[in-house]
Image (tube, rainbow, N blue to C red):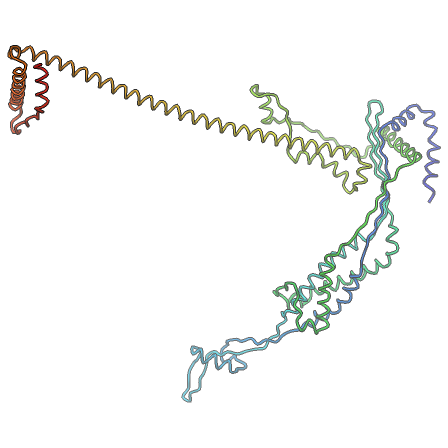
Length: 519
């Protein structure tokens, strides 16, 4: 292949005369050179600290597992059945003992005293394959299948190491009123230099792993796993070293493989990536500027190109009102800023930027994608500001709620106090009214008493008597009047009723009143 630099110089020499003869081309190239240019070259190398000794370890254990799967050890056990006497193949002392203790199975006894049973207990010998050692091998095969599949995927997809050169081009310039943005990523990958030395060994190991995958797949689908160990429970570590596991070479090799898997599961598979960000020379920047010039020029003359496909879509925008709009139009509310603070909004803003930076290392992002990094930082700042505003509003709402609760409590206490004061006022008014009534009664009684005294003192019999005699005479008059009143009351009472009861008169009170009137 011809040298790329030589080809480019020939092409540049052919088109350099354009800048001398065409002023528009010269202005376009000048705008590209004066705009924001962000060029970077990244050299990425891959290496791995592979340890494939596990391949040989598994390769040694596969034949022993093959032997166990084809010819598993078994245990003979005696199983007892209760069957009709005609179907019993053999009987023993257990059959006689069972019949002696279960007389319901005695059919009859003949004249000679022989017992004829209806059912009898018989025993048969069966092979038991679900012993502890076979359940241990079953569990080991399942672990081995998962272990090999994971390692195989790693070797298949990540073992082919590559060295990559990436060129990032980001140019932003203005040509009059036209805003131009050019973003280009050029990537070139070649087989890594570190992998060449291990290529032969890796290919051989990968072939061995594929062979072991087929063996383990046969173990998983064998009769030993599908029928003999059907319904068997896996063992729970740690593994018990039984006599069979210690003495049998096949089962002991399976136990050694179990221990190896326990150690290997915690081993890390290192994958080393080195990235170098290189600065471009002046000549390289000129070549990139010229490349951007040709691309922009082609885009500006793209109206004369043949259309391959034309699509036209019309979008109708609909303005939807929300509660915030109604509050904003209401004069009772103060002006406020409509801020959207939900997480989904900021995630949608950051999603395109994150997708662009996906797969890029932190070093490349810091050096090449500064604008995108700044954009993510601004979105995060807005997100935190919105969250802070939401927290502040929540605190203010909580504060207002507490103040409202205190105000409601204070109003309740004030209403209770007013109610108590009104009750006391009502009780006081009733007491004053009762006192006034008592005063009126006393006043009326005194007036009646004075009138009575005046009336009695005006009697002639009392006027000429002395005070002592006048008092006695007054008492007699009172008694005679009371008797006349009682007689009149008895005469006016309806017939059939008893005589009216004689009113009780307090003689001491009458004597005192008569004495006062006499005086």
